[in-house]
Image (cartoon, rainbow, N blue to C red; front, top):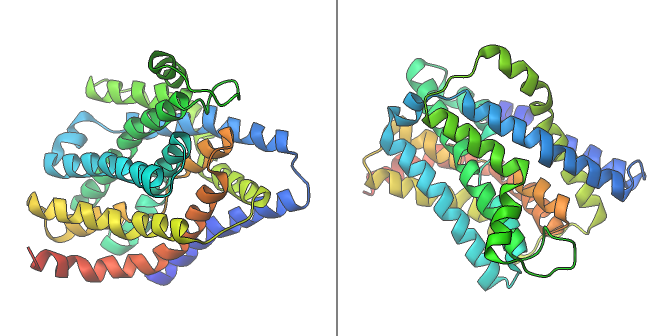
Length: 324
């Protein structure tokens, strides 16, 4: 089982990242071409992927298990701010860098790896599928909250402006963030779901084609970014990797237990929150040349660390539950 997870889910990330790294080292891409590739993902592929993922959900799905929904949603958003604060205050980064760090280390890549990792472990029964769907949908919806916050913080710090590094006012920062497709697309999708509007199935193929490019191109772009900077493993990188695959799921698991979740639901929620970083943070950082080296390093180290974290959480969840 874990052999399949490693070779079906973890290894492809490193292979695609290595292809991007090799492409940059062979000068197959100029810096302007790399930025254009990042722009394609950030302004088109990622918004389309988020819009499709969210609008395929239903309001009933989100409220099927309200406890699971609230714990995962509040937990993911709250831990984004913890990650942001530690990067800002402990490691002394700028607000823009801390925002990208939060988008990277504070959010799991549930949309890319969620079902691929969880289904082989827990099976594909109706009950399991529903729980996995709730966790996946909530994590994706959480991105509709986290990404606008991150973009707003970057805009407030001047990272999305004209390039002069000057800070924007609050109103200007909000307007600048809202104008980004990666902000208004998922926000619109959440509103559609909450209003109970079901889009025709015929609409999705038009978005799916570009949406399917998101994960692969984002990882490839991370490899390109990694080739332009020196890969590093230091205290900060290790902290963020441990925060992503161990501390985040531990905090959410404890909160879930205190709220009455147990058994397989608890284990699936914990595993979903232990997944490697979401690629949205990497691509946003690359697009605006903010926190590129550290972000790419966090992605690589966290992905490698997840190969050990997955069996650990399956073993440790029942033990953790017995302590409460």
